[in-house]
Length: 86
Image (cartoon, rainbow, N blue to C red):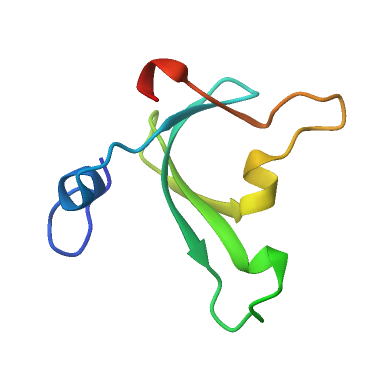
């Protein structure tokens, strides 16, 4: 689990489980937070980002929120919620 400045995990701090998603290429990730890019106008859709962590190596990634939830050109979801964790 990712640690925050207080030393607690996100789950310990908020009492909420980070949902697990499977990337279309096979990796599993924990959705940690929705965040905003500083300095972007409020109406800018790219100002909202998904912050997520790889379960394989613990690396933290950020991508535009719309890209996280969008489908690829062939209709495949980029990330699929793993229902056993919902």
